[in-house]
Length: 128
Image: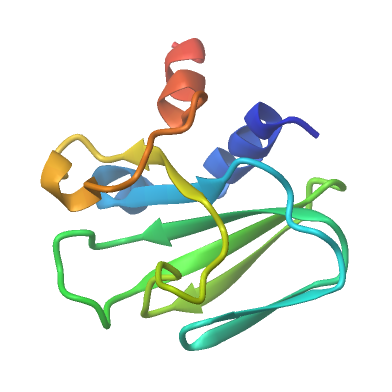
């Protein structure tokens, strides 16, 4: 599966309210199988190689608000994990990039992050 295919599957599971106000981050390469990913408040077990995204549902709020992780396997199945805290920190070894920013979210909310070469906007625009 390519990164663009992963984003297409991710997009199919993103809600309208998430598109209206979220920032979505992803890792641009698959995560290896058989890992325990200990993020704040949630641990994700990767039984198979998978792609990983993080959806910040309220990027202008302080932390302790609804968010979720989405794991997409090569089989195109996805799993969602509710969270309240971000993965970003010194213990997080992944390079997260932005794959979507709702129009009303200011640039200041995403400072320090790069934008992926392919984004959900690319996919949304190709469907129009």
